[in-house]
Length: 396
Image: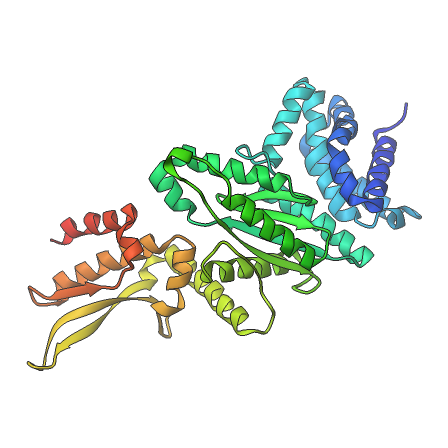
């Protein structure tokens, strides 16, 4: 009887060689090969291997396989591919081996890898696919482009029309993205999508501009005249970096720049320019305010006196948001743009409202007026209005 190790080695070698020769067609053929590879997991399950013992056996076997003459040369992506093999295919085979049936096993596998709303890869699976193509680009010296697309004003769509309509919008955009000639497409978060291209950056820019135009032409609720736009940031290997985090940060910076310039456009950050510096500041502000929200004590109000020059006396105070980092108070100009982009401005407002009102009751004379700087847009948001309403009764 052929041992599972022999089957494992043969299947893994075939898989690696098919990927090395052409990762694009490999990605398209992979679903048809799923159950073939899963048969190894099924065989192991029938032999009584527990999941923990299974992983130990495979890791021990792979370490020996690495040392095998000629195997590494035919399998240049061995570590990442093996990890993927363990995580994807063997659990699927084990499910089949335990009598769940191929249909149920495949559905479980699909739920773990694909976004249920759009059918695109989820973020975890998208990153894995991206890393395969990045390895390939490094090995062959080809270009690789990452595009991040975000729907403009998606929160307003959900607030005004409801989440079912928001889901309709996301599915419509996802269907257009699927039609793109991209190697990998995925939904990275609520209203954010990712695309990977093994093409030149200039070609991808033109394609993404056409995609944004197609999104703008979509009709979701003709009777309501509902239409949406999207913004996109693009980054490429090796121009913007050589890792997932490098390219993701660069593409996200391009997306921030597109939003800053009004949205409904594609942008690429040019390293070393003023735009790149401004986007970096916003990114640093986002890190700062997210960290501060984990410890709300660090978000504090500052009170700037408003003086009546005729009477030469203080008649009110303007309340300003600050983040206390220990050695200094960081002004709002550093993090407000990031807080708005990250859609966490209401949480910051709520903390400032509560602390300012309580300070007014405790430290200021009765009748002291407080002025708050909030945007007109914030005044139209239910969360902002509720934040004030929820605090005001508690502090009279």
